[in-house]
Length: 371
Image (cartoon, rainbow, N blue to C red):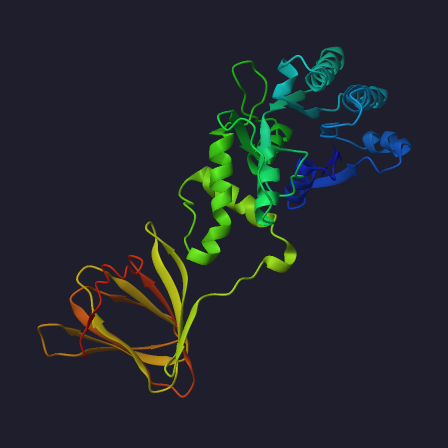
């Protein structure tokens, strides 16, 4: 079992890294963060077989803190590792800002230089990751990235401030970052043209497009529209947005249609996935008795007992499929067959339905006809 030390363990990337490392049985994790006793760092590093150095200063009130938090801490860690007499490998999370002429970028570049000098001096493996904007769960709004701020504000109905909608961002997801960090720990990172380790998947998007995508997410609860999760960036942004919902707002009501037969509610819809809805049907009650030209459906009884009946609209033979929640099976509803589902049990029938296209009142493709 190898022992890893993670500095900045309570930060955005640190928390995600530790959550993944904790699932690996061959790793022992030692953490260090800003509220730990500084004097304990020496003892912790003395046990390290590998160091993930993620601690640093991002947006201090005093720019001089960049030097202390990004350069000074890195120097102290490297000095303590030298004192162990071992060539302990180290990974440092840097920033693409290291290539720019600003106080933050200069401090990250200086920290990189210290790490490379450590490698050249004692022959330890080092991994310098120059990361662009990282997004994902647990990122701090108004601190780590615009994505976090946009998700946080949208989830709370707050306005989004955009000074330059055309500005392009390069984004990497924290899961991809963690994957590459662990690959570096194993000695198999992806490397860029400069030879340094890199995160392969990078998303490009303008601030205006980013704000537009995120601002649409709350409306999906009203329309039941599913975000376009086929698009990888939209899927990841939606996941992140949900992580910023206030904890008392995780649940939301559906528009439920009730009558003596029971109730029916649409759950999800999308041109890409069709429509999903659920119903409760009282004993002895039938639903359906209609047919479609091209629309298809799937019926799945979740609880209770029922019979699904079919008749080809120009024929007379009735085909029956007994179904129950005890032995789940999906029944396909082909076009051109009038069909119904009848509760044949003594308890409420719960059924999940899927339709190949969302219901459109202007083109319902639903035609009444008794089975």
